[in-house]
Length: 95
Figure 1: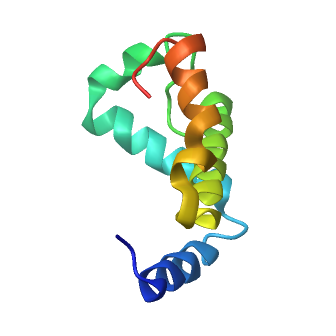
Figure 2 (figure 1 turned 90 degrees about the vertical axis):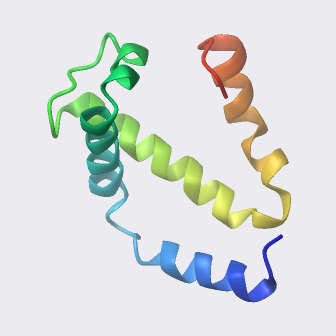
Figure 3 (figure 1 turned 90 degrees about the horizontal axis):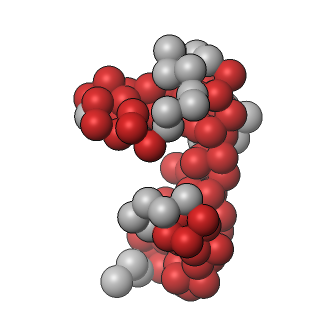
């Protein structure tokens, strides 16, 4: 369980990413693909090279979803339910 202070610190740290969401997201995805190559199978239609438009676009979406979760730390289940459903029922990957 996060304390009020924990939540405040998380939100402060997250605020430092403001303006760099696409770059941070792209770098995180590229590192994931590099460190865990089996994850590439979920993105067969992507150009998986570092800095590609697909990596940058999806990285930005991932960071936006994390940002939404951080804005809703008191109700993560509700904040992430749409994303969970998208992955489970439409994309057919583990949410």
